Amino acid sequence: MVLPMLKSFLLSSLFALLLPLGLKALPADAYVAVDIPARYTATVDGLAAYIGEHYSGVEARLWALYSWEASRLRYNMEKRDVQLSFSNPDELAAWTLKNGEGVCANFASLFYAVAKRLGVEAYLIGGYSVSHNNVRDDGHEWVGCVIDQKPYFFDPTWGGGYMLNEAQYVHRLDPAYFMVEPARMVRTHMPEDPLFQFLDYPHYYDEIDNPGADVPVPVFFNWRDSLVAYNAQDSLARLGGQLARMRGNGFANDWIAGEILRLQHNYEVVLLNRQVNVFNQCVERSNKLVGIVKNGLADTMDPTSALREVADIRKALTDMADVLDVTDFSSDVLVKGAANLQRQSEGVLSTLSKLENSLKKR
Image 1 (cartoon, rainbow, N blue to C red):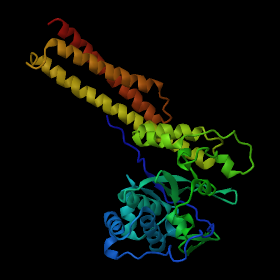
Image 2 (cartoon, one colour; image 1 turned 90 degrees about the horizontal axis):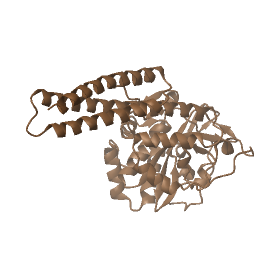
Image 3 (tube, helix red, strand yellow; image 1 turned 120 degrees about the vertical axis):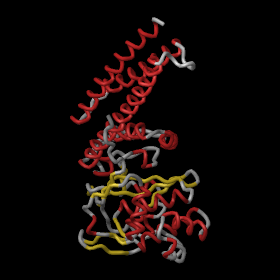
Image 4 (tube, rainbow, N blue to C red; image 1 turned 180 degrees about the horizontal axis):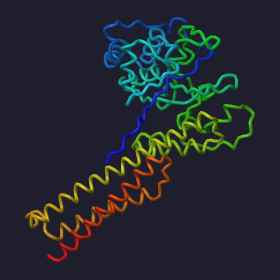
């Protein structure tokens, strides 16, 4: 039994572009769009290699990437409502380079993929945007980087232009969304996961959505230690931690509520597939053991060793069943899958009991 895994990297092409916040106070000649020969922009590796070779220092390299994306990639208005599905950011980044266009998911994934290759600690961040107290409920993506232990944000999508009257895209390089500090970025970019605000006192959703609204007292959050833990976690633990943080971050608007439901479903799919893998391993071990016993026990396994193997398989199946018992699956398909797995497990346990009795008589 193998259940289909959901794509954990479902990328919505919906996003919001707002009027620029205004230019940074930067040297007039420092932040101009860079030109990269076309032969280096065909692949993610080629783009990263060129930038790494021709620019020195993290800021200069990231500006080269940011300005090239913002000035060369075209925002495709027709793809705003198209759902894109890729198994990882690298695939979307490669698609973006090949097509030379896209939306926020494309811009952010390419920036993330190249930044990682340049040795930058980078994170692809999903959330929503806020402008003039209005929440955009179509989702947005940008990138966070930790540079010299300090967090900064980059939004090459907004850096490339803005929407005028929700209908016309105005293409213009804007450095306002390059290396933005957390306290400023959160005013317009609210991550779905509070961890990626990179703030000691993260803002509640409603605190940004509705300034002046009554919200709980801010609570200190050690995002640095939490980020270390996040990096060490597997996909299931990451999903569980993200869900817990989102549910604890105050009032959830409609977009966040929808994301919580989606992530919860993904969490359950990953969890059940993990238990399916445990079960399949136990079946393989059990079948192998039965074969050995039927052949009179191989020289490498005496009855005592075989009994230990039986006990170990039984424990693995029991632990699997305990996980399924305490999980409240929200989908009928997942509920039926878990029930079916439990029934099959009982059959294997029955076989093990018979095998155990046979071994004890030897």
